[in-house]
Length: 204
Image (tube, helix red, strand yellow):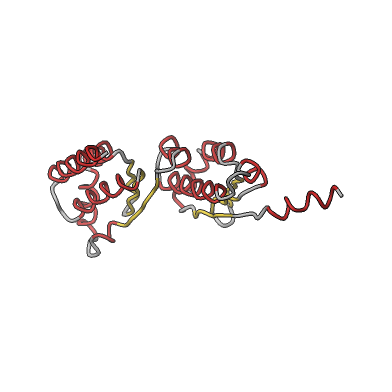
């Protein structure tokens, strides 16, 4: 009898997995901060995580503990798995672990990435370097201003740009970065986003 009563719960558990690819140059820093990544995934999300050295991926999967913690809301398993995947992606992209934790703890924070060449396909060589320099600004000032005004976090990873924040704020920050890529002066871009964010704040 005991065996048959336990089987329905076993049948209900379907393991779900996600894998996040680790670029070669991000492998050493990820190994150094592994426990900072591992601990919140296991303790907060109740998921299993491992670094797959053979495939160079971070593998995430649900466990019986994930299901037990979310018996009242089975869909929460998928939500936690997605949050954990975004968190790992953010850390691999180059965000600080403390900043990336917002992806686990808050429901309205997301991460979005795009290539500089998605905006201007013909950029290469010195023109591409100058464009990336324009996004950062002198001593990172332009990037820092966009982050502060739009309440986002931005990582410039070679020609890939990652933005973390709420959907609306990501859109404002992305528009600003796209304007810089197209050649708009930083001062003009920063003035425009301040105006946009003031309107957003007035609306809410």
